[in-house]
Amino acid sequence: MPHSLHLAPLTADGIERLLAIAVVEATEENVMPPVDEPPGWSPARQQAFRQFYRLHHEAMYEIVVDDRTVGMIRLTPTVDEGVAETGMWLGTSTRGKGIGANALRAVLDHATERGWRTVVADTTPENTSAVRALVACGAVLSYVGDKVIATFSLREN
Ligand SMILES: CC(C)(COP(=O)(O)OP(=O)(O)OC[C@H]1O[C@@H](n2cnc3c(N)ncnc32)[C@H](O)[C@@H]1OP(=O)(O)O)[C@@H](O)C(=O)NCCC(=O)NCCS
Image (tube, rainbow, N blue to C red; front, side, top):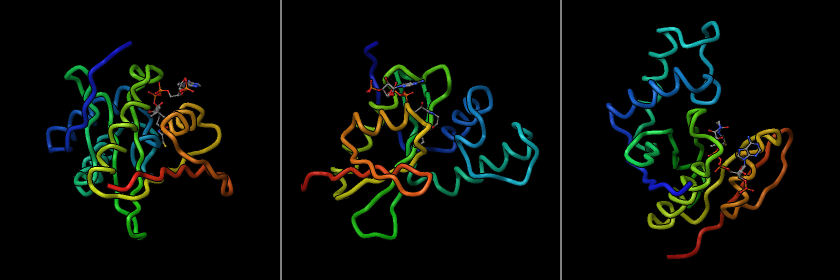
């Protein structure tokens, strides 16, 4: 279904919008690093989510579709010059509708405009929708251990 999609730099209000989606429509391992808490969206885990996103907000964007936040995509500098890393998640109700691939295209456009030469991402071979979205957007895949590494070579500006 056609939709208008844009990426919005992540703000404090945006972190709350993302948390509201995550609590209802995502599992913690899809949206934040592990914390030493029982499974589920306990108040402590929600607070850890806020802290993690506050710390990393500069590299993160809300994915906004038809004026509604549906997930997050990031473009994080790496230690390798000219190389940024991406990763993303959507709430379950908005997966499988082409939004992930379109958000990836948008972040690759951002990366090109900002002069990054290469964008990388990693996932697992079992994550079919992630692997297919990465390939659909032009990634070259390599398999390292139990991971799939996706590499996008961006055009020179
Ligand atoms: C991974 C994710 C971002 C993909 O976004 P999405 O909007 O669901 O994916 P799209 O609808 O754009 O589909 C991308 C491709 O996957 C395919 N796909 C989508 N859902 C699928 C499913 N459940 N099973 C198999 N293939 C699927 C689509 O057909 C499309 O492939 P194609 O271009 O070859 O036709 C989303 O599913 C998600 O948030 N998953 C949980 C978090 C996660 O795994 N993040 C990725 C870490 S790298």
